[in-house]
Length: 478
Image 1 (cartoon, rainbow, N blue to C red):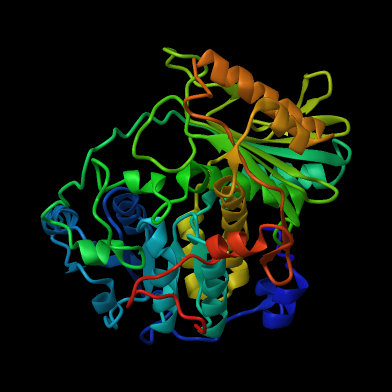
Image 2: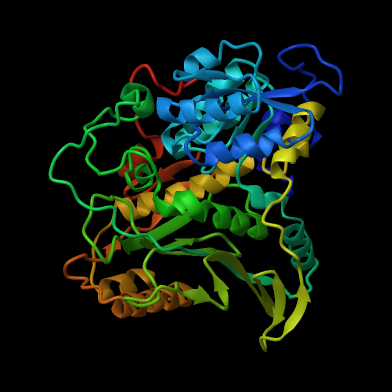
């Protein structure tokens, strides 16, 4: 992992890589004692976490938690079949009182990530928090502060930081084998169908404690067909596919750029094209991060490569999602280094981040956050970049092609990306008069204070802060 940090973090904590926490576990233990974990949010990814952590020697899953009792019953039944004891909680606050828990693994909806993490740190528990680390920029920094203050091990679920092939590729590029890096592209092309449209409030499943499920978010009537998973496409609880899947590749982009603070300028554009439904977040997006000297250009597409087609677009032969590092003398994409002539130079065998969960447990035992491949600060910064792009988009207005090109200016990379987007929409039969393109403003960011400045700063900082519903409030002082 690139262990360098901003001066702000170096001053605060003397560098994560060199900091060991001489703090005991929840109970005294020898080096071979079990690490006892609780998994919070167990519908899908949390259920996977149960299985992944159970397979790690010296780890026991001792508790599960979810606001939906049907998922608790399902997972508790699996433990019973294995003759394994597990405690089940509906209310996460009750779980925190359990001294039989050393670490919390959370795969809740995004709007709960910060509270789960801050409260766990306060309770003396380490945390593995799924991506995106935070639901807004402000609370992400509070999570980092909580990890520092309570001297906890906090790992981000951006598991590609544990990919040995990516680490090798990063070092290969930093050694100058492809010349200077010019641009880093990230993209996620994953099919997303319409979630449908309702004409009134929908019933919440009887098995759900809706007050706890909403937590920090407004406890508003359910205005979509499905409570679960489709929360990704509602701003009070999710961050669109940019924060859902795109965060993995955004994290790699920032890693390869070597940026250890937020981008000084950002522009987002896109829309929710191809259907009219209850989703709020864009299914098609372009975001440009004006880092110097190496910017990041990110693309998101949820429609297929053409109307009626089952396949998705690709970029330089890479499908679904990836990162392309463009250099003077070639580029890196899909696990290969290429020359400018497109010929393969060197292969890096990507592992998709295998061993990430084990890496967390190793750091829990060593008490050294520098052992983590994706320490919470890394996950926060990458998540915050996704939020920056979404904020520009959310402050956007309908725009014609000429208006967009005027705002793009002489940025040839961004212009080229937009023209490909135009063709993509055309092939999907999208009528931009019915679902218009939204063009966000250029937003400027002060990386030291992590606040927006200049025009639109007031509106942008409100979105960067978010809001909370009592008593589920991320505290000003953790």
